[in-house]
Amino acid sequence: MTKVITTTDWKELWSESEQNGKAFHKSKGFETIHQGNILDVGNNYECSTELRSGLSLTTIEQEFIDDLVWIRDSLDNSQFGLSFFISGKVKVERHGLTDKTDESVGKYYLECNSDIKETEWWKAGDKYSRIYLRIEPQQFFQSFSEEELEQIPISIRQAVINSKLQPYYHQGEITQQMRLVLFNILQCPYQGLMKRMYLESKAVELIMLHFQQFQEQDINAHSFPARDLSDVDKIYQAKEILLGNLEDPPSLIELARQVGLNDFKLKRGFRQVFGTSAFKYLHDYRLEKARQLLVLGEMKVEEVAFRVGFDSRSYFASAFRKKFGLNPKQYFHIAKNPSSVQKKSL
Image (spheres, rainbow, N blue to C red):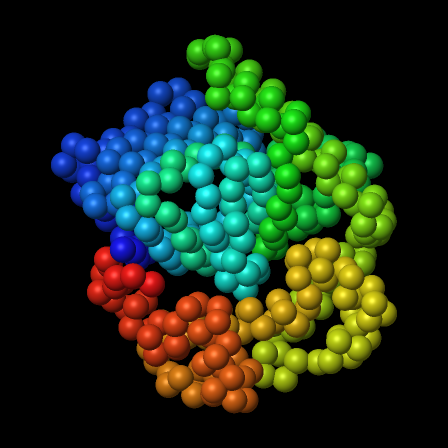
């Protein structure tokens, strides 16, 4: 059996659990703990530690009673960080950014969710745990020189330079060195200030190891020269042009001409920056935009399809069903009444 919850549902369930004495949160110094049994959902534990300006570490442990679909449809703010998986497995789709991806033991990712809505699929009884490093790039890297910034991944460099974070997702493999650092974090022998200093050193070491892995992949893939930020800016410009012309987007050659790149460099660059092709990115964005319009309930399905650039209603319905698992009208009903599908098998 499967339950469906939204971010709003989770907050309400947590609040109810606190009132019933089954959940609590407490803060002491630089640590905040959220822990409890969430009514009819499962157990949740989060311990967040503020390490320094622009950097915090959170240990998360979760286990759910039933199979769960979690629709994260209201993000409080943008998050930029590294997530390392210790146990369990969850399938996640970042709408308009990635297809369904498996997040499981041995993997980690760097992401900026920047208002990206997510759907997550969890299995009942799996004990899921991870370590998450939240980074605020402009604060954390403010003391880095321009030359030093050239040595870090493009996605982070862009976040340091620009005030608005761009959506990004990159998954990597946890190395043996990373495993040792993660073990040290979980087995931290200190308390108080010493604990904070110890965890900060380990968090910075994980960031360094990610940079090292990125540089090795960067060399092997013959990616953009580290000094050429102008090409990356053009890739972002190309994305904005696509998203600004949903109904009649330019061809790849025309898009390349508009931003001043050749089509090969645009194709390669778009995939390196966003993890997918330009028109797959556009396709997913159209479907996510359609989902948002359907939830509002102010337009018919045909109008929504046309608004986001689909000429054929049948193709739109097929693409929507493939991405979200439901027809457009069915999704509208579930989005408005999530409780109506609880305990219903997908």
